[in-house]
Image (cartoon, rainbow, N blue to C red; front, side, top):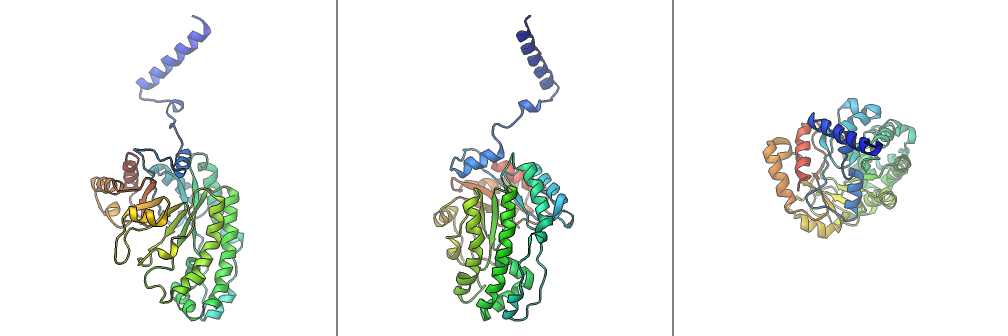
Length: 342
């Protein structure tokens, strides 16, 4: 037996022994395509039949909010659920300030990068570990949402109604800080951002000019920059505070994908309706408080199949917003596994 024949025979024998013992060598068990390449192809419109991308997001406990512990928990969750990309939660809380009148917003200072460093530790470690196999995106909240966190949404809303020009000084400072953070994330290597917006929900402001002239311009500064520079950005139209009467005010917001709720205050849109409105791929389908959290595994499977039976061609299965932090990860794993077969 010559050397070539001997090596070939040995490899075949070893493979048979591994298979016979239920052990598959990793070299023979690699997926045909990585999650990263699959999602990049999906973004180009090359959606494969019989496979729907899926992802769900949640806030981890206080021990795993920032730093290395957050990175480890994000990666554990990503691998357990088998979701199709990594989304990093933003957990850098703005310090609460007591703004008593609109003019006080001139005192708002732009946080520098040291404020974000604990969050950036997690970003660096997750990008280093996961980027080769999957797209990695970072959560960013709108300046309006960060302002509400700092001064309470009640005070922010009142001051915007009384003197929006005065509040704009504070929003401008937050935009300045936001750009520092997002640019650093892009330098580290994130593939995009999950861009959350609020402010145009039902009942937020009696005068629509407040949103259009102050909240929206503050939103768009960072959103437009990252959408030009990153391939995968998700616009999240957040209805955590209140439902929407219409999505009209955010239809022109940037983002390669839109995550929103089909249910508005007084009507429900089909996914076909939303696809025609936003003119880009969509994400969602499951109520964060519905079958996903309360149903049996069989009910979750049935609900996923029902949603995907009427989805647009380019669609990511997900929830309408962040799912409860105490949800059993097996429920999310189940929903994602079903989507990967449809």
